[in-house]
Length: 501
Image (cartoon, rainbow, N blue to C red):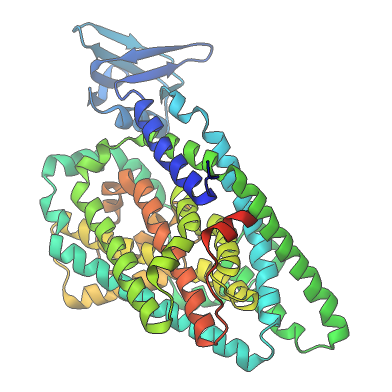
């Protein structure tokens, strides 16, 4: 029996994880009331009422488990709060001195720590890999003109794909108009359930000031930037360090370059070892996500979710093959086959940064991209190239505007193109941050920021989906730049590459 290749194992883990999570999903009709020294479970309620000084504060019903849990969690003052629960048989009970109200964890989420360790291991590698790779990459580009040439091509290509992605998103959302399809009751329920989550994000007061953004790229202390994982500042410092290592005598620069080259190589080898547990980690991550969030929220936001996914599919299977055909001689089928492992990790972790070590390994060892180009283009792309996120922000902005009855004119939609492109550049390559940057886009066209409460429920799923084109575009840029420089090698067959793993 032939040995299963790693990417096949990862896909199997993903599918089995989704099935396992669906079978062992968290019971939506059951909650746990925790006291100081004990706890008890409540199930099949008809009404779930919060009282304060015997006055009704808020009432929820049988299908509002998530809203019940979130409401109590977000209560700032829990003193004197009582719970009056009307059960399915019509009896009522009052509960006092409750410390917390929680979902009851199922076996579907028990193994999630394995997946969390896997993601943390990849994130652990990301910063030293970006720093070392960019220093070596910039130092290997022979002179300043070469650095400027490669850098110009890379940024130009990223700008092109970002504008195309946002345009695709706007065309999809204006054609389907998912915000006009949503009924008022669904809108009210979503706003009620997620308003506190939305408020906490809005209170972070995220803003986009171009001058301030450019100033903040320059780190005051590069070691603090490394400790904080500030990728834009790390990229700036690493590129400058690499460039000016070329300007000092070779006897002094060579030991430094060799040191960082060793660090980079060690990180790549570490990735290969970590990927051994990838199928099991992907299984636990997907199982936990499906078990906790299920598919019910997708029904409520079906048209919005389908619009985003349709845009991402057009981006992945129409725009990218077109660009690949125009700029290289690689067939898209061969390109996407080589990326299967990268895409599985990107989807399950929702993090471009966590996927970066895998992307670098695949681009160099499978796609034939020279290290000096891969180590320059990929870390830069992980930081500034977020096509999927930009498309999602464009769709989400127009969707929220449609729900609230705002008609966005051409000028406002062009503003979305510009703002979403800039916000995508400023988006950290970690899960969930795209939602924060969306607030900037909403502000730019005057759409109510609290509208993010409408889409928070499906953000985790869509975050997984949009990370796929985010990382795919980085690899695409890598082969395009290498091809333009006449330095692109041949794609290795599956068996040869997976054998190295």
